[in-house]
Amino acid sequence: QVHLVESGGGLVQAGGSLRVSCTYSGRTFSSLALGWFRQVSTNEREFVAAIKWSGGNTYYADSVKGRFTISRDNAKNTVYLQMNSLKPEDTAVYYCAAKVGYGSSPTNHARYDYWGQGTQVTVSS
Image (cartoon, rainbow, N blue to C red; front, side, top):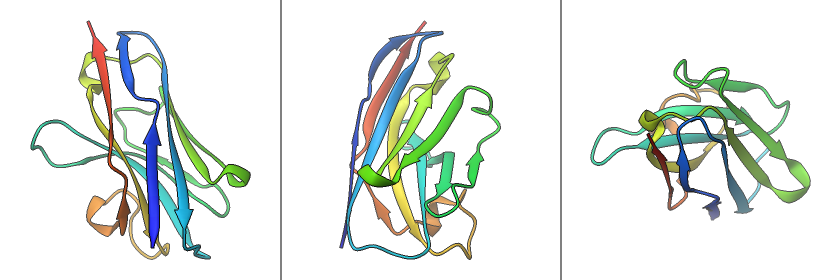
């Protein structure tokens, strides 16, 4: 079993910064990708960023490139999403997810196997 726990969400003004974290525990895998997705109300979950646990390859949605940075700390089993220059349209519940294997796209939420409970990020104008 795998557990993902997000933290660090909150309220920030437009133009500000926020960092959310995701701590991974449980079974380990040789090929694992961790991703961040966000969801507004009942809309479909939108890909934000992803990182391969081994190698550290990163992927970003066009909407966040240059503003958000995903990183990992292997020793802490934690993935971070540093969000800068936040905009009101970044407001959403942010979910951390884990995908076993590298065979499928890291941008497709349907390919992820495990999910955290989500953390709210609100950007005020």
